Length: 256
Image (cartoon, rainbow, N blue to C red):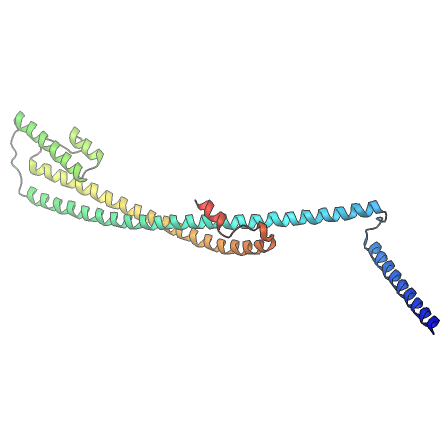
């Protein structure tokens, strides 16, 4: 009885050993089949394993670089969008100032036009036509100079108009009667104020155009930010936890 049990136990051990040997052979065969063609020797296997490890490291480094680049781009485009938003805000403020300048220029033109209307009514009565003495001519020249300088300080004359008045060119005649001289001055003021009004309108249109461009740039950059942030979030998931940059940290540093 004891002999039979011992025989049975011995047979079971041999069967287990056989199965273990078969499994080991199967693993070795599977591993051999997985090897590339021509790789059978230990050194070749070691080299193949090292090459595979190096390839995996290179692939991991490539993914790391691409992920870091995606995060860096998201940070940079966010800073650019913030700068574009600030620029758009400044452009809107410039539009408001340009609108105010147009209104001021229009009001100044209307005042100059009203002054011209009064000068025309005064000149309609006519002025005495008598020879001037040398002193009267000098007095009128001095009055013209003072009137022109005062009008220039008010903004009613341009630099060129003031120079013409002081040098008695382009219709500025010191021999004219004060009433006629006032009419010449009023006409020059209207011409200058209307030109300034037109310049203000042009500046306002340019300001609105610049504002529209800045606003469109903000919309475009915000769309780009949304796409870049989505890619950056996916990139952060690829990176190891220890090497993930804090969200917004680099962005704040770049903005500073």
